[in-house]
Length: 224
Image (tube, helix red, strand yellow):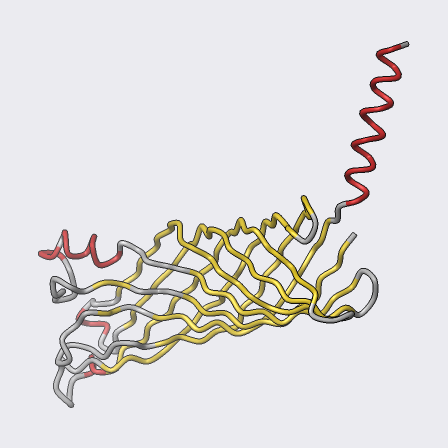
């Protein structure tokens, strides 16, 4: 009898605790700005600080483990960004002056989110967590006879940060406006420099890859 009463008590406490907390799902679409390829190159070799824009999508599920604090799991697809690069190491008649680069990137996320009310229908949040990213990179040269096309795939761990606002449409449904930053620092050039004899690039000692992503999105969230 005591065991039955204890079981009932534990079940009641657990049920009450879960009832006081919330679950959520959130989906969003937006625009990604991703840095691509070379940094640290001499001016005569290639331009730097380039950017590939693409369309993004994201999905997150969350659990409010205490008042206004959420544990979230998510997936961000940053799309496929494409741009034309201008390589100054070739003369004006060379077909290698214009090179097409594409970067396809995604990330699986674990984050903590803190929410705070601004007004009756408006609230703000901040997210901080880690991202396991995956990057597919491709460079295509106009003159295929020189066989300088290049592909690369890599994954890793980086920091993730996000801020945004929610607008309450109903007691359960919210609109969201979001900004996020995902740190993506592959070992691309480290590995290429280690095999410089086979590399298609003339890599300076300080060259590196910076594929950091800024993402702007709007979405909807539903709380249970």
